[in-house]
Length: 585
Ligand code: ADP
Ligand code: MG
Image (cartoon, rainbow, N blue to C red; front, side, top):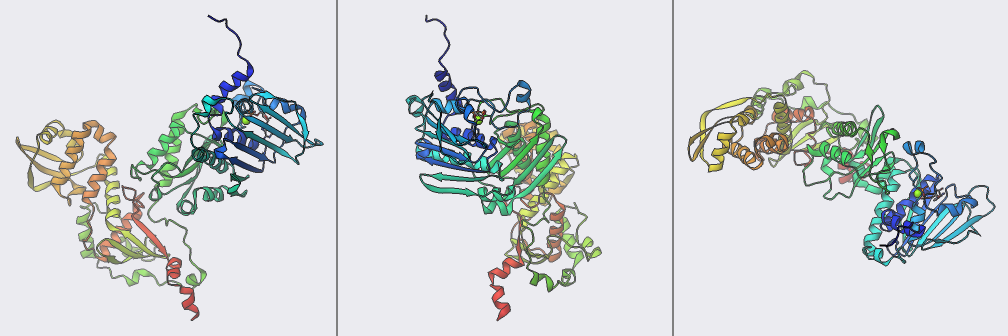
């Protein structure tokens, strides 16, 4: 057996490079972080052939003093920390002093830099880890790192690289992640000579809009919550604007992009109630936390973090998001945009224009909601005629599907079924949580032919069914009867409801239904109970529904993440009719 010996430095760097420089995008990340650590205000990235042929980052940062140049490429040489104490409260993006050495070990690298006060710049070249002595060079300020021919000397690694388009895609994603974290810095990305991104220095909202697009910016909800050493801020898409892929999810911890299970789980859970499970929410979230409460040194790429108190972080993030996502229906998706001309004409109070046939309407609405009368039915309208209702007042029903309502901003269009479903869902959830689900015995029990497994479920899970508000009886080996249903659902078809619950219990097992499947089950029940399309409602019923939507948290979306209502501003309507032209003619 060969004797034990130390590995040559270059080989150590080449091994380390496997972790730090997995692909061009990881080299790009390191170089961009170096530029930001050097307080750059303007960074230009140029790539060729997926970043494999060339990857160049030029910045206007502090630069490297001439005498430090050879050290910049040496392994474990860093200007950022000097002690363990420093490491425990590290605020710079880099600190391990291995990125440049690793990149230099697996490519042809040129580093040109000039720090303030130096008469000229210095250039140092490295090839496959061999570093040549520094030479004077020309550069006005800052640093240019030029990496060429990645993995030219390690063909085994080169084989793992994907197509140029794929590698470029990864580089662009890295660029976007970092650009999002530093809106105060200007960035450019050039690919094969073409300008792909030009981002001017600005504020966070502007940068988020540029990178995630106008559609996101127009619909996003701003969040900024603080609790002790924790702050969460950023923008989250309304669940109705969710995307089908995961590509627009950005989470940062102290300015560093991370993938973290604790955070991911908290976010998913906060969206769970309002988002269809096959869709993915879009968000840009910045968690700020005392650096001593988080360890970023878990992995060389530092995209993983470890929280001292993960539970607390989870709770905080979940609650902060849950609160923002529970926007009452009355909050319009966009700030009202009313041109001054429209405002100055003033508004006639709508209430007087609406015939309130209170009695007749409310009665129907109450049966619809099975007696769960809310405080905000038409009586409330009559008592507070001057009060403004965010969703306004119903003016018509369209094709038995939509309610049209008029509010201060203009027209509100409500998907009747989706809105009612949402309200039912929230009520069921609250009732189940508070253990106040009441049973409504049926005058005539409804019997039906049942499968053998359905009978078994009834025999096994009687108490659980009662907890959910159902009373079922086994009449014969092939017949079941529904004797009672939850009061909230008494308008729905009893047999269909019961069979849905039985199927869930059968498929997922008793206790799991109430824990993991609870919300899905309630959503199914709410859907059955919600008012069907083509059921005609009176204005009073419609108004009562609007008031209930306002009172119900998260009623901006139905349980499947579909919107329950939209706002069409007068300005938008005016635009449709080219109203400005009409005024002048
Ligand atoms: P680390 O960032 O962990 O310190 P690196 O290998 O990435 O290690 O960089 C080594 C050192 O080179 C840094 O500590 C810094 O002093 C210097 N350096 C690297 N890139 C730049 C840059 N763009 N501007 C100024 N200094 C730089
Ligand atoms: Mg670094």
